[in-house]
Image (cartoon, rainbow, N blue to C red; front, side):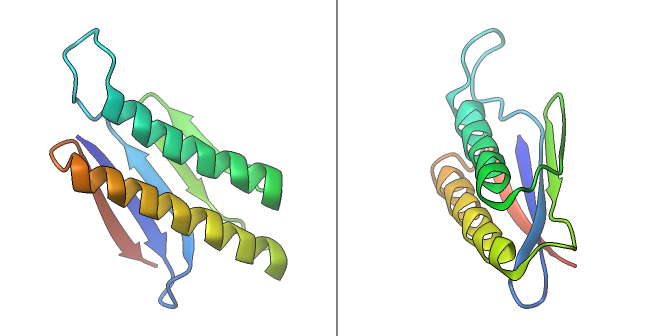
Amino acid sequence: MTRAVISRLNNGDIIGFNIRGHAGAARNGEFDMVCAAISAVGYTALGGLDELCGVNTYKESDGNLEMELPEDMTAEAWAKAQIILKTMEIGLRQIENQYSKHIQVSFKEV
Protein backbone atom coordinates (compact mmCIF):
# COMPACT_ATOMS: atom_id res chain seq x y z
CA MET A 1 0.00 0.00 0.00
CA THR A 2 1.11 3.56 -0.70
CA ARG A 3 0.85 6.02 2.13
CA ALA A 4 0.75 9.73 1.30
CA VAL A 5 1.20 12.08 4.25
CA ILE A 6 0.58 15.76 3.55
CA SER A 7 2.05 18.21 6.07
CA ARG A 8 0.01 21.33 6.79
CA LEU A 9 0.25 24.42 8.89
CA ASN A 10 -2.70 25.17 11.18
CA ASN A 11 -3.96 27.71 8.59
CA GLY A 12 -4.32 24.90 6.02
CA ASP A 13 -1.25 25.73 3.94
CA ILE A 14 0.63 22.67 2.74
CA ILE A 15 4.35 22.76 3.48
CA GLY A 16 5.36 19.33 2.24
CA PHE A 17 4.50 15.72 1.62
CA ASN A 18 5.82 12.19 1.79
CA ILE A 19 4.58 9.48 -0.54
CA ARG A 20 5.93 6.09 0.48
CA GLY A 21 5.48 2.51 -0.63
CA HIS A 22 4.25 0.69 -3.68
CA ALA A 23 0.53 0.44 -4.36
CA GLY A 24 0.63 -3.31 -5.01
CA ALA A 25 -2.37 -3.21 -7.32
CA ALA A 26 -0.76 -5.51 -9.91
CA ARG A 27 0.98 -8.86 -9.77
CA ASN A 28 4.78 -8.93 -9.67
CA GLY A 29 6.21 -7.96 -13.03
CA GLU A 30 2.95 -6.47 -14.31
CA PHE A 31 2.22 -2.79 -14.88
CA ASP A 32 0.71 -1.20 -11.76
CA MET A 33 -1.71 1.46 -12.98
CA VAL A 34 -2.43 2.74 -9.45
CA CYS A 35 1.26 3.17 -8.65
CA ALA A 36 1.75 4.94 -11.99
CA ALA A 37 -1.16 7.30 -11.28
CA ILE A 38 0.18 8.17 -7.83
CA SER A 39 3.65 8.79 -9.27
CA ALA A 40 2.26 10.95 -12.07
CA VAL A 41 0.39 13.17 -9.60
CA GLY A 42 3.42 13.50 -7.31
CA TYR A 43 5.94 14.20 -10.06
CA THR A 44 3.60 16.64 -11.81
CA ALA A 45 3.42 18.62 -8.56
CA LEU A 46 7.22 18.60 -8.35
CA GLY A 47 7.48 19.78 -11.95
CA GLY A 48 5.05 22.62 -11.29
CA LEU A 49 6.91 23.65 -8.15
CA ASP A 50 10.19 23.67 -10.06
CA GLU A 51 9.01 25.49 -13.19
CA LEU A 52 6.52 27.93 -11.65
CA CYS A 53 8.00 28.54 -8.19
CA GLY A 54 11.70 27.78 -8.56
CA VAL A 55 11.45 25.11 -5.85
CA ASN A 56 13.45 21.96 -6.40
CA THR A 57 13.72 20.60 -2.86
CA TYR A 58 12.73 16.96 -3.03
CA LYS A 59 14.26 13.62 -2.19
CA GLU A 60 13.46 10.36 -3.85
CA SER A 61 14.43 6.76 -3.42
CA ASP A 62 12.82 3.48 -4.36
CA GLY A 63 9.19 3.79 -3.33
CA ASN A 64 9.63 7.12 -1.54
CA LEU A 65 9.06 10.70 -2.66
CA GLU A 66 9.47 13.52 -0.16
CA MET A 67 9.31 17.32 -0.45
CA GLU A 68 9.28 20.27 1.92
CA LEU A 69 8.89 23.89 0.89
CA PRO A 70 11.78 26.18 1.79
CA GLU A 71 11.07 28.87 4.37
CA ASP A 72 12.50 31.73 2.29
CA MET A 73 9.91 31.72 -0.53
CA THR A 74 8.37 34.95 -1.80
CA ALA A 75 4.67 35.49 -1.14
CA GLU A 76 3.93 35.06 -4.85
CA ALA A 77 5.85 31.76 -5.11
CA TRP A 78 4.18 30.53 -1.88
CA ALA A 79 0.71 31.26 -3.28
CA LYS A 80 1.52 29.38 -6.51
CA ALA A 81 2.94 26.49 -4.50
CA GLN A 82 -0.28 26.24 -2.50
CA ILE A 83 -2.35 25.91 -5.67
CA ILE A 84 -0.01 23.21 -6.99
CA LEU A 85 0.10 21.27 -3.71
CA LYS A 86 -3.65 21.52 -3.07
CA THR A 87 -4.26 20.26 -6.61
CA MET A 88 -1.89 17.35 -5.89
CA GLU A 89 -3.88 16.62 -2.73
CA ILE A 90 -7.11 16.54 -4.75
CA GLY A 91 -5.55 14.14 -7.26
CA LEU A 92 -4.28 11.80 -4.56
CA ARG A 93 -7.64 11.80 -2.78
CA GLN A 94 -9.41 11.01 -6.06
CA ILE A 95 -7.13 8.01 -6.55
CA GLU A 96 -7.80 7.00 -2.94
CA ASN A 97 -11.56 7.21 -3.55
CA GLN A 98 -11.26 4.63 -6.33
CA TYR A 99 -8.43 2.47 -4.97
CA SER A 100 -8.58 2.69 -1.17
CA LYS A 101 -6.98 -0.75 -0.80
CA HIS A 102 -3.85 0.60 -2.48
CA ILE A 103 -3.41 4.19 -1.25
CA GLN A 104 -4.07 5.99 2.01
CA VAL A 105 -3.90 9.80 2.18
CA SER A 106 -3.47 11.37 5.60
CA PHE A 107 -2.55 14.75 7.03
CA LYS A 108 -0.09 15.90 9.64
CA GLU A 109 -0.36 19.34 11.21
CA VAL A 110 3.04 20.90 11.85
